[in-house]
Image 1 (spheres, rainbow, N blue to C red):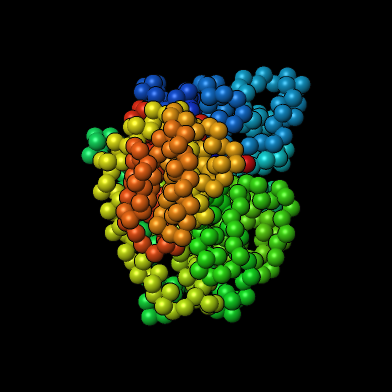
Image 2: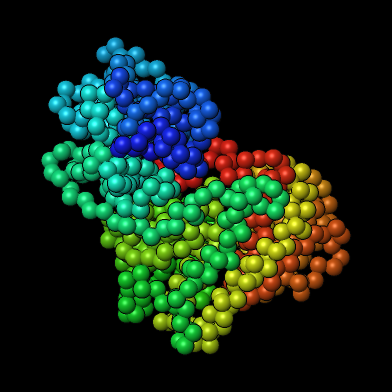
Length: 613
Ligand code: F6R
């Protein structure tokens, strides 16, 4: 997590660094800082709070054409001015910004303290500055390499040194680091968002790589300096405007989350474009890199993702199992590799990630590949670590997602699964008629998403009522259960209310004890083969005084349930219902959080792109 920026060129670095940090703030926002190199050495400004607090209080004379900056999500040490990055050595000649976690930080801190070094922060990063300063290498590269040789852990880092004022040295091990090539100037960032205003020509560092970045170019080499790695650049196809701040919404409130919710009809159309084959009732997914014979040989599908990507993975596994009749399930990627999983050659592993940088998912992919398994990625960010690590995949084309709470990427993940299920199904027993039926359903989806979004006013009204509850249940069955999980996730992460997801069928086995007039239940009740069972459970909740909000279809009969609030979504094919039922729950969470006055795009304690384990 955390964001890194760096600049070396002909312009003043500080304003560029601050601008870049603003664009990375979704990665961590408890403190921020910059260091610039000038003729008189390194100057550092850092403070707890947002980038704008730092910008407001930046010393007037803060000139320099080389610099690094950081926006932090605390791992070691609380959010404070002192723990903010950049960190320096005692002389102030070295400044370091770092993403990741140094596993042997305690041991290194002890060693440095025993040697008389006065550590001023509680962070793991500070040790890097001291290790670089203590190295007797002739070059900054040698000094950074020496320091890294002592470190166990993950890092993306950038280092400047007063004695080597023309350069930034960067390194990567498990945490992204991108170099942006400009006209006689170079940029460094942990995320494309900070670069795209200036350049779309980039080079991604790989794990174990270092680079020297000067105004005239960059060179890459192995971290032990034994050889050059001759890295080329790629031009990324992105629209820089897509990273701009959200326009004010009809409620006069600015937020990326709202913008991203509203973008879903267009985003959904993009992920489907050119991939539906109506003639054969199937999908074309060239990026999977599998021919029909290999596709047929798959005996099991295992989906891996974290947080919302895991929940949509559960929806996706259901879809694959239902359409392709291949056993499929989803598992939290963060747990997967710690149980020494059995990797089977005829299982297709699917890694799901918006950012493509989530370290837990990336490590799961690496574990599978190390054991010889085949992994494909459902990833939004093109060229990201997970996308590069996989054997093939489906890009999601949702466009940049900035709000911490994932919305449009999640919808496109679901659609990515629908495409995958179609392709897997059609080389098996899914009939051409069913394939065509689903394609027709998918084609209707973008407009239906628009229809749901058009009901936002009513949803905002419902949200303000449920927002008053300290605790809520979200319930659903089978296809509806992951919808409930995702609904609860979205609600808790931005409203800070306790929202617990349960299978509707399991309520009577325990949690029903918690139902009361103070605990609303948001129930997912599609028109499907389980409607009657679901409605019976609603009556059990109502009989105990539990208020009910029900995401459902118009033709589901909820009569006899006093005070029930219904949210009707348009019907599609039953297999595609989950995504349409998910949409109102996004708006419910958004408006509850807005009603409670929370910072919607930057919820407390969280960050986008979780690049620490
Ligand atoms: C929730 C949310 C997170 C992410 C999770 C995985 O709204 O955004 O739970 O889904 O951290 O992130 P990615 O998809 O980038 O791997």
